[in-house]
Length: 406
Image (tube, rainbow, N blue to C red):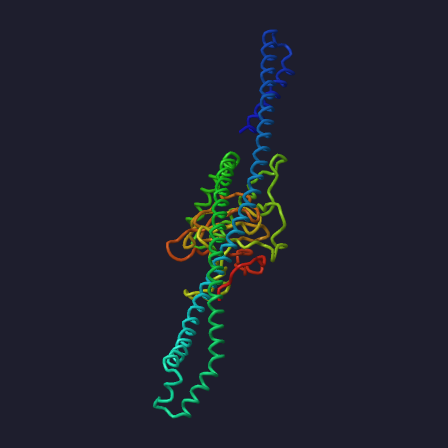
């Protein structure tokens, strides 16, 4: 709007100058009027220039604030995932300690039973002193044999008693470790809640700033919604998104004031083709489904599935542009990011998405959070596509500590 007004003012000024050149015979009053109009135009141009400078300064400040908030959200999201890793490790350790405690209790019960039989034999001996053995209804040889056997059993009894004391000590130690791990787990979860609240605050501030600078967000969202209605499946949606991208590239002005975007609206950074083996896992959890595995439907899995904790943090795997964010058939909340060079990543199963269509995103930036189902754990589905075709994402992901089922 400002650009159009500026052009109109320039045209008016030029027209006024032309009229001034071709009408030398104007009366004094007319010349005075023309001079006054020119002064008004000059003042308007000056005001326009000042307004442009003010808007430019505001834009610089907003960009700076947005960049700061983006870097902070990346840091906080990383801290959250570190805490989630600690929670996962502590929960696994507690599960192992509980299993170990159960084994120790069963072993102790077995040892107690064995020890009980020996004690009963000793008690019988105590109740029958040597004098009574003389009149006992058994032969002297049997009496001697029994005494020899009991004497030989004493060291074994002592060994069993020592083993029993050791098992009891280990059981006590296991229970103490479990108490410590539960305390650590409670502390980590408290820290995790604090970081999540901090991230929520940062995202709210970021959204406020974004609304001031992104005037085309609603237009882009409406356009994508129309594509979603027409798309038959995910592959069809990807194809339509690519057609839409190429169409928008052609429509972009090639003037000096508006430089064309690079292919695929790729955000600055290391290209994804050079990032193989370094991409962060989008979420912390257990790998429960691999690329290419057969599913119950008879089809093969085109991505990987990660079982996460409740409300787990999900992050952007690589720099790019959000081309879709919303609900799609059978995928729930779906986020599609274009990384350039024909690559797209897809994240599905989120409970909340923290990005909007057209937004430039960076690796490690918050993408959203998982849900908190009544039963079971939430599952994140991750796909990586090249030129529209699914490829195995695992070789692209960094060797981060992640649990693998099976």
